[in-house]
Length: 279
Length: 279
Image: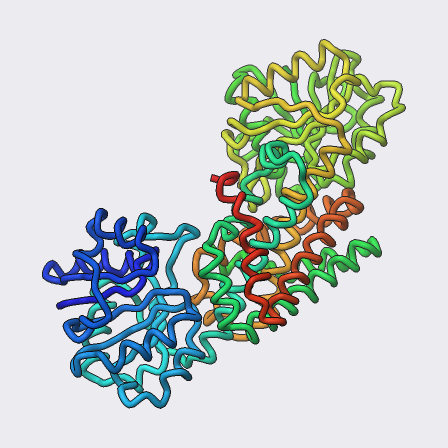
């Protein structure tokens, strides 16, 4: 199996490592806009070497893990060059736009839209871990539009890596992820900004910060390019969840301002189910 | 050393356990508004038995770890009953109000205001850990108002438990903690509420939630009574930090709404220092 990994950051790198671990004969080549990432990926043995777009026809599988706003153009660039028995998949965190952008492509059935629910706040090939996807949920959108034999092969690969497949419509994916992932990143980035804005003496505050602050602000270490592009691609759903969050913050602000203890207590209690849900 | 622990939840319980570990002869008795907590604390061997307010004079050290809005009254109730060589300390998460409330008490010099920067999202004596305070920062406010010999003894105890002492003015403490602790809890509680509000099918979202959501929402598992009382006691500073946070959320909302990628990128980049600060 000859694989081309377009984008070898955290996700692309981890997928390549997992492939090598489970398929000794897999030969993985890479492309990346960052020559530093390419060098690192070669040095770390993640990829065998650098591939070129005019060689795409030589590959059985092309894996695209680049900022989501660049994915549709890249998939449309790859599809016409693809060997007729090869598959291209993307691993972006948003799915609706990419699915719409390839909807009418004559080779649509050689594309599969995926999103592994895995990652860390770190980025680049150095952050890649071969076990990142083990036990992770792998969301696959509009799988029915992908050629059956190609779909069967890639599903086997995902399962081999220990992923649990979940089929989902692209729109539902983007709605759900806005709430459970994208909004968390906005709240964390802006919390970090607020504390940095308000505090002059950093060493002071951060000595005073317990583990609570560290966990709420952890996602603020995520890659700004990755996330700017996710927010852009999922604008409508992200804004919807952000406004709902702002409305809840206004409710507690008002309750605190009115010294309405009962209302504050009710607001805090309304999340008690989180205790059972997030163990 | 005979110690009375008023409030034996997570913090009071952990302090009692640490005392027993470092002072084999320490005899610890407890009071708590919850008879369940009292029973648990006795069964878990955290306290020897239940103490009564009319026995306070028998103790060398009284440790108050109850909801912060109840602390000033409790300290003022304990001080007159205290043996003249005994000390009462509180471990509340806010310090300005308690310091003001005891400011002019004739026995002010037998009180010490403290705040251990330690805790978890769990509560009750069952959540107590003897090592909770090991390596933790112990903030001590207005220590100069506490009698020198009593102060010296309790500082030795804190250091024996592995805590790092930091002297601080009460007002500065409350300002700093609003940003690095209280605001994190508000953002986490309201994030949890937003997701629970917006999603009907829970099992669905929470399967889709990665570790990012779990960490931003972790503090929403904290005790609502504890936190309602902290927000009330530190109202002015908490509102100040909350409004600064809301202003930053409005900035990113506006940038997303205007599809101003550069502005979004700038906002996300403004937190990059968090990467160096929170390892």
